[in-house]
Length: 342
Ligand code: ADP
Ligand code: MG
Image (tube, rainbow, N blue to C red; front, side, top):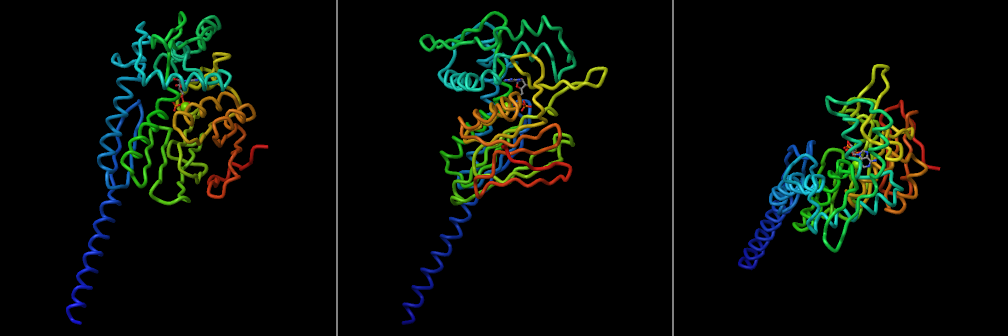
């Protein structure tokens, strides 16, 4: 009898120890903040392989920036395309194919052929200025007409057109991070690359949700006007406060251009936050929807199964959310009012 008791106690101790070790392993956390893609990246992971995932995410985001997407780094493929070398990797062929599709679906509101326009306005640099009409016309003339030749794996740029992936690089980085945390089965992952955030909670059950602060577009960088509670996915925000300059009369010119006019988009919005399954989509669509305005954004959002929170110039927060139980938006600044898309 006594012997049996000892065996039971020993088994119980072993099970308890195993539970403690498992819990310790599976709840291991890893976090870091670093600079890449001209912004701050912050990574918070939970899972047995979280520190390996963190190392890999850092490596991949730096590689993406330096070797693939940067317009200014001489070792990147985009730099090479813009400077006459057209042959590209399969990886970039795949990415550019997705971006061309979004350009088409957005009716050209999203267009990565805007590099010349971005340079012309120089917003965010010391040389920011309002260009003259003729310069703007020339910069937008052929900006959609870049093409991929799948046979030779080359990109053709029409005269005067260069590529700028500034609107989508951070979202692409979120998708690479997703691949890494999936492979390592991280339980919970939050990876914020500037205005794009990956929220993954695969180990937390089907009803897991995340809270994301939406910046007050009229406030300081750390001020929020609403909190979005959302299911796992990617969330990106584009706003007119991110980079801008003011002319002598105080008129503000910001960095998201309407490629059909060549001027900063003027669709009555201060910011757009988009949630989608993939960061490439949420980031590209936040830029596109900012250009399109609320009404014209709706079919595009539907096409990509995405949701949006629009903040209008008259301080309304208009959302396409509302149909899902675990997705809510709470206004935290009384000077804004909440409305749903009609
Ligand atoms: P942020 O870079 O502040 O996160 P966005 O994701 O909206 O904001 O991207 C804006 C950047 O994208 C601009 O700085 C410019 O490089 C580029 N861009 C501007 N207008 C467009 C557009 N209509 N389509 C695609 N890229 C654009
Ligand atoms: Mg964007």
